[in-house]
Length: 625
DNA sequence: GTAGGGTTAG
Image 1 (cartoon, chains in turn blue, cyan):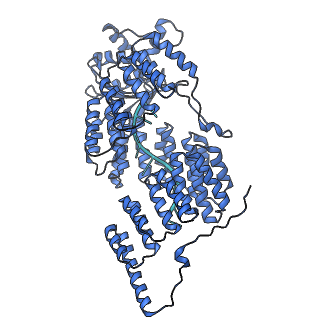
Image 2 (cartoon, rainbow, N blue to C red):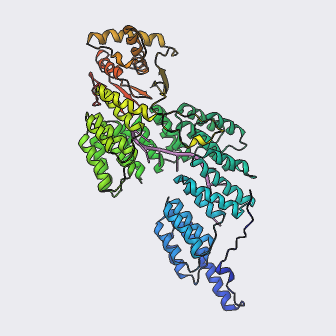
Image 3 (spheres, helix red, strand yellow):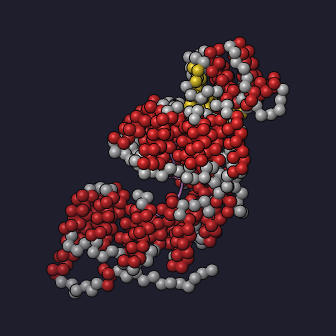
């Protein structure tokens, strides 16, 4: 339904001012002013904002254009407070000025300021938001997933009739993207269908939405339908694959993109590098590193952040640190990523040292920092330290704990053997513990073989039932594939990179060309490790099988297959590096310790949440199994 | 002036 058209009357003081008749004196003044203005714009173009500011002060009664240009420049290049100062100094502010300032708030993610600014604009200067205002505002609402506010902006758009072609496509796309980011697929689609004019940005935004929702088929169909496929289109598809754990497909998209002569940019590479992290494919990662250097992206903070994460997950924490040390400008993500890297390697002391260094350099830790730090303590068995940092977070840094922090704390306590304390901790939480919190406790019950508590926790999890499937449910007409955490397990898969190519295995896998050799080697290994006292822990086999069959079911677990292939393929001096998508099973953990002895190898397994360095019959992780 | 793809935890 269309609401009656409301005419917007923009009252600009400058426009109403009466101009005196032209005279020679005024002509000269105007000419000077024009020259000054030109000089100001040149300074801005050269990035000399301090000079531009001086020029502004010398212009007699500068017009809004001069102010606005400087506000934009300060918002973009900083210091941001200078933009606020210039804005405050303006004698009369037009809608462009308000918009420029709003764009600044949006760019710096200052949500509350932006909203207050918008209200001021309407209350103080009686200006009504126009298309540009909304186009700056909507991405901010999208980022905050502020759906109710977004919907009211949508209603305003309908009332204000922003339906000139140019406006409609801009505002429509921004609305569509806002709904997409708020995971409201139905409304996003409705906006898309209601748009008379669409452009490649509109398509890309919808493309991206499907990809993120894991609707790969729908994404592909849309991608094929698109007339213009640019860097962003490929980037959206690629990141969609990466975010849905389909790293290999992401590489296929990347190759296709290159074949079609679409040049990857910074965002494309930032999406691609985590695909290497995912696969723990060091050779691929090094190629990508080379590629970003060649393209001149190496100095980008986001690229370095992705590289730090990639090297850490590919087992080369030393190279992560190298990238980190060489960075010209680090942001909070750089520090968090590096701390997290130490965490998954069980280097809790190094993580703590880095955290202290971060504070020394004047960086304020955020909520994610503490998740990284506490989980680093957890992986290193530093229970007291972890508790200390949790207290510091709440007391000294006034960061309210989220569910994620509680998960880390339960993991820290329970994994450290303090099962009862962990249970009490859950009871005392101000939030209602979800499946993930109980899951952390259950995992620790298995490690510490506390069957009674384990049973109790299992019952809790059953009672909670599957997690709510979220707002995507509202997208009734769209099929959404969703994995419910903890209930539907994805199949265990392990892989190993040999000379730059990846070899993946699932349990009992016969598909590898050298399957016969691999199985033979595993049978031999079993004989050898049994001699050293290995006993299969068949409690990890859930199927109802005879003991001997259970032993075999364990023997052909994916991680063991990948390791056997590594033993066959790599020289004795080379460490075997295997990655598993889930957590390594307890029996495999024990068996691998023996394998390092009978085959005299160093074996590294990266599982779903940490690194296990096996050497001389031992594992670096503190878990008892 | 202007919308789209982006890195960190579990």
